[in-house]
Image 1 (tube, helix red, strand yellow):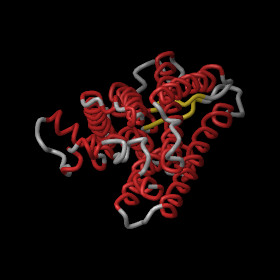
Image 2: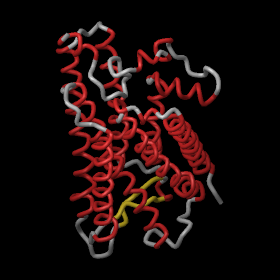
Image 3: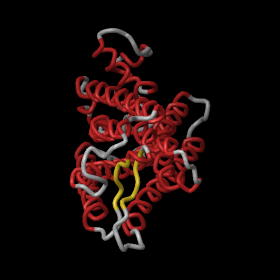
Length: 323
């Protein structure tokens, strides 16, 4: 019989996963329908669109298996080391690795676009190539950590309302954690953290803090900074939270809840702060559900001379300084 606490916690996780999955599908459809990715100055939408698509796959895994297994308290297969759980955990971790690498691309994109506005490194072609490299790297890492490593693999674990390491018999070390999981997660957070700190410093130094251009670039940084913070807290809870010695298994649902939230933070931020996506959403819905300024409707204000926060174009305050 399913306990009341398991039912409540499991339903919360499932409702959260379904809500964010539907939100991601809606935002991705807005990007595709409005062809925001087609503008050569908006190649970051190619990266954002791919990121949202990969998170849709991750969230689908949660709504179809991880969430229901948490409610039921069972594996739905023949244990943690079964073939079914191995396949699911490999897909889950591969998507997580890919998301980590995409975080690095987002941070690099913001750093190059704002600090080196005359460079054209992030073209659509280069973004597609970088995405392809990220996919191959994520595939190589997940094959090692989940298949070829002597120990151990991360799997969904309904017993702890989240995820845990499957420890192989007669193994005293965990090369998957020490050689892949921790270096990738910590390295991503450190790299992104340094990048965003440098960006804020550059914007405050090169632009006027109270100018509209300066505020816009700060808002751009905040968008991707929130993505980075959600990602960092999610993986930190997996490694650090158990060290608190909390006995209630239900408390560990915080990790999958943050993983699910991390999967939707890009879409949430776009609908809150990005004029182009809000305008596209209103067009898809056929009514003005998301408030937008008149400038966001004017093609002249959407050109490369006045980019939105997601654009890869040259910031306005840079143009004014060199005019």
